[in-house]
Image (cartoon, rainbow, N blue to C red):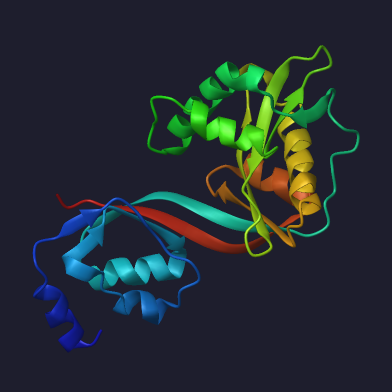
Length: 225
């Protein structure tokens, strides 16, 4: 590293954490040279692995990994055959109490900041038909998945969750395929999602549905006070 850059970093004012920093597509060299305004540093950072590691090394601050994730892009959608029992449908307002419980559990498992109430967050997705559930044959919701709004031709699948007692029956595959198709039908030229590298089950599932790996990403937490 250029020593003059290191000296400039050393003369920063007291570290002022910001809640989170997320890198888009950022080369390693640009990440290493990035200096936030007013002496700020992120409390957490997420982005492509090489860029995150380059930025963290340049700051000289101690950090720890939080999660390794992989970006996938949908190629040709290949729904499970035979399909799991039941059907997909758009979520409805009547589903909100159950979906709120599922979302809280999803956030806790994946380390997202908890909320006291997910009603508004979920209602927005329900109103825009961006949240689907999978119903068991008797009409009972057993899984869910959501998609982001389509922005610049891209939509991201997220919030893939199956009720713990219902896992292993293919419901996640069914609802993910449904919401992926809905994203494509909405005009998304690219449908993407992230997976936890520590979860081989979900990584294999998305590959079977036609998703292909693009890049590995890393989430870290800076450990200074």
